[in-house]
Amino acid sequence: MDAAMDRIRRVTLVWMITALVLFPAMTLLGYLIRRFQASPTPAAHPEWFYSLLTLHALGMVGTWFVSSMAGVSYLLSRYVRPSPAVSLGAFFGTLAGVVLVCLATVGGFFGAGWYFLFPLPLYPNGAWPAWATALFFGALALLGTSWLVWALDVLRAISQRYSLSAALCLHYLGASTEPEVPPIVLITTVSLIVCISGLVSAVIVLVLFAAHWAGWLNVDALLMKNLTFLFGHTLVNISLYLGLGIVYEVLPGYAGRPWKTNRIVAMAWSSILFLVLFAYFHHLYMDFAQPGWVQTLGQIASYFLSLPAAAVTIFGVLNLIYGASMRWTPASTLFVLGVLGWAIGGVAAVIDATVAVNFVFHNTLWVPAHFHTYFLAGLVFFVLGFIDHLGRELSPGEEPKGLSKFTVALLVVGAYGFVATFYWSGASSVPRRFAAYPDEVMRGAAHARTSLVFIHVFLLGMILYLWMAGRRCVRALFS
Ligand code: HEM
Image 1 (cartoon, rainbow, N blue to C red):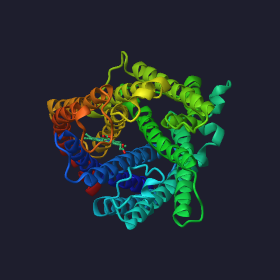
Image 2 (cartoon, rainbow, N blue to C red; image 1 turned 45 degrees about the horizontal axis):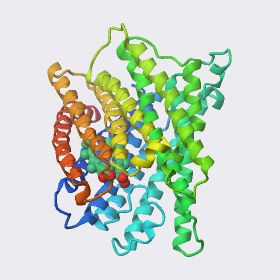
Image 3 (cartoon, helix red, strand yellow; image 1 turned 90 degrees about the vertical axis):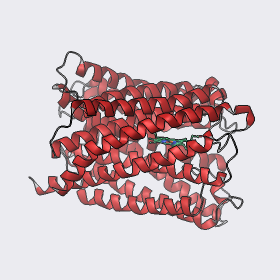
Image 4 (cartoon, rainbow, N blue to C red; image 1 turned 45 degrees about the vertical axis):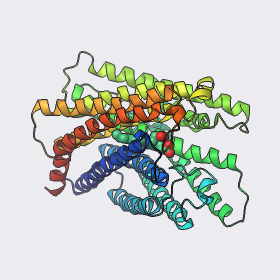
């Protein structure tokens, strides 16, 4: 085996095994915060709820961003050569960032939420010490720098083989289909350009926070909210797109048919490059100071952002599997189910991104409902599918068919049962981010108690999955 390829494989296995450790840990934190909400009496220490919520959310968003990045980097190495050393550097930067975030939240009770909206982190009113804020910002700087360098390196690798316009498949919009560009190259290029703009915006936010803290500048809160959501919204969006890049590259192998770029695929994905930068405006619908035309633009961009990529992907998946002699393994099943979860969560998100609806659903549990759907039953399924695929490729072996089917069924029932209780609460106006519910929305506690049952089902599915796919990855790393 080529030594460079062997290094890429090993680094990818290290990333995936880390994701398989972090994900159950963050799920347990999610279980704990849902237990707070399930309690009929107010929590004795609500500060725990907010610091665990911050750790859970940043931990989950970070875990799925890095694992989808590692997945596409591995698959891209069929065409170009991203540097395994840079990926390993990003791994150690991420680990150090995780340690700092744990110290800030579990050690210092930092609880301003994963997107640390200005000015809360600087004015905690005694809820956490200043050092916890400093550690949290230090962690963000470290994570942001590591991921920025990693994203730049993957783009560098792509640029060594494809020009920018070729990587964006602009030639497909005309008459030419040469050079042939695999969809994963197009999707990664679009995603990482957007990712870089989000990370740069995070750098500006951190600098402005520091300047405000030092008393050099009186920062505008609306500007900070815009910049923060430009970062947060784009980061979660592109994690999903990178996950889809994995599906475009791997699923055809299970169908025995190619999934090639064509004019429609090129148009759909390149349009994202512009639209995604404006879609985050839907997070600011309730900010009366935001100009009206920006709100209108936000609604239009939110609608048009979701439609093209969803339409070509869903059509592409159906086209791939219809009449094909599909090889149904946990990987291919999770890919197809993941596209379904992405689509269902996407519809719920578009409903919420409609101004008239947002007026009612804003800050209710409908919001975690939609993003948990496309994360938990979408992106998580894509990456778990990829890990299963990678494990089987590097360390072949079969377990009883019934066991893999049962495992996938537990994950599906657990994930959908869990998010259903969020939808149910959201539609009943139960607010999000409440450590305990007041009497007016006590039904939220009953919904939370129901959700605990489904979290157990999901965790059982994860234990079986770890026993199957996790073991295989560990075996492959040490072989
Ligand atoms: C079974 C697994 C999971 C459980 C039990 C869980 C549980 C929860 C709960 C109870 C909340 C608080 C809801 C509220 O009142 O606002 C929450 C928020 C959140 N979760 Fe999860 N979650 C899980 C998976 C995930 C995944 C896979 C992701 C992302 C990839 C994720 C990202 C987030 C984020 C970003 C928030 C919002 C935090 C905020 O509002 O500040 N979660 N989760």
